[in-house]
Length: 200
Ligand code: ADX
Image (cartoon, rainbow, N blue to C red; front, side):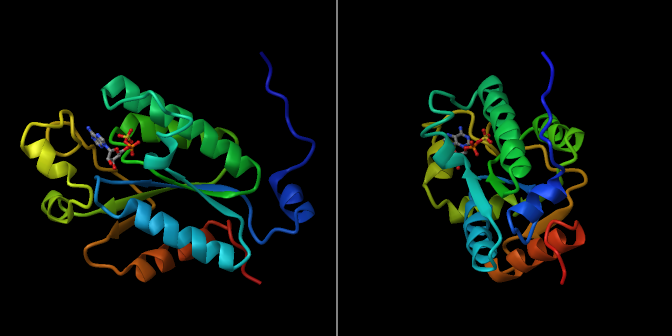
């Protein structure tokens, strides 16, 4: 099979769309309860309010649809993230700022998503939503840590399943020390630095 290229560059596409940005993916990774979805939702709103076309791909939501049927074994998580790597690259290629929020516990899966983007010249920003496990566990917004500790939920990330911390994330957000506002500001700054948002 042969890849079929568009007839325009991403700059030309952005110009024709009258966009204030070029497409990119912000890949937010972190433990359950680290604040990924909260930050993704807040950032999406802030970007849209500035007229930037942003769209969230959220782990919980995607598992209802595209990835319904996938569980939490290593193979299923890998497939979950493989698909999201591809889908986010399509969004980014379409000129959207895609914001993914998946635990994405394996370095190899995140690196693969990065490669897909870089191969196609699409900006990829790895964002580590960092909190110590104790903090995530104390937050326990869905009561899942409690279940995992009680042995009612197996293969729960951070308890009896691994989380491989990013080695060189472009942005680290210690969400127990930063407000949602401050986290969003850091991400917006990063988008300017990467040339995803244009300074006028
Ligand atoms: S990932 O590991 O494949 O990236 P994803 O982000 O899609 O995970 O889904 C994580 C969400 O699924 C968690 O926020 C939690 O609500 C739910 N969940 C259910 N079972 C597990 C589990 N065993 N480990 C982690 N999350 C789980």
